[in-house]
Length: 314
Ligand SMILES: NC(=O)c1ccc[n+]([C@@H]2O[C@H](COP(=O)([O-])OP(=O)(O)OC[C@H]3O[C@@H](n4cnc5c(N)ncnc54)[C@H](OP(=O)(O)O)[C@@H]3O)[C@@H](O)[C@H]2O)c1
Image (cartoon, rainbow, N blue to C red; front, side):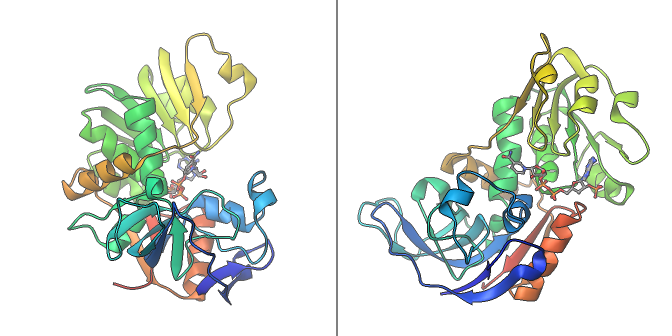
């Protein structure tokens, strides 16, 4: 099958068109014809060889990167009962699987617990933008911070793939939401209902915000987030490792989130998009090696607005 793969770790220039043999389908797996996939910072880390155990133990070159996708079921394993050939689905490829089964590929092999039905009204491109970024935002705001109406919530990095979804979920739950972003993204964030937008390039959020109930850090600045947090508040980060001192704070709770979303969470997210509670910002590029390289370089620049999706077919 056709893939875009790397044959050694390195820059985006390592991505190349590669034909690989499709792995045999196991009883608990589904084979999906891929219509669209999106690019995440994790893809960049994988390309550069920065993901260690278990990746470095199970991967072998050529490596097909990518985790997010949307497509149509092409075959189901013997024990799969909840999907049939022809069903439209979206979700993730397994985090790590021998056989380099990433989503920069004509076909994706995954398991039913990692996907959800594609609802009517959501395009393949929109759905492919949701899994990692959406589940990360959903798990942080809904499950780990358990945001309540009228709470004050700071999302650091509001213009990124995760941040843009997180600020909108927090607003949908009735919170007062502040975020950090570069000036080019302020109008968009205000339009999406964010109450306060701070240019982190010129202002430290801790100089203008205080006593927040919760902080979601997608930018890797736990120290600033902690200063904004109230004494018994909670900070969730997905972008930096808390220091032992930060973890030992007797009052303020700090936790790194390993995102662990479910099929039901994916369906909830899709519903929020359909109801207009979450408006996706998707840049869609037709599939080609050049466009995947371009997307990698953009994500690596750390200034992408929302998500970049690679469109394979309607
Ligand atoms: N643990 C997990 O489960 C998990 C899951 C997903 C992602 N992550 C991590 O979460 C982070 C965010 O992911 P993502 O997909 O949202 O990345 P992304 O889309 O590449 O984020 C780009 C955004 O980051 C913003 N940004 C960069 N530096 C910033 C700073 N110092 N303060 C505020 N905003 C800043 C940029 O905003 P401006 O252009 O406005 O400057 C840009 O909009 C990454 O580090 C990723 O590896 C972890």
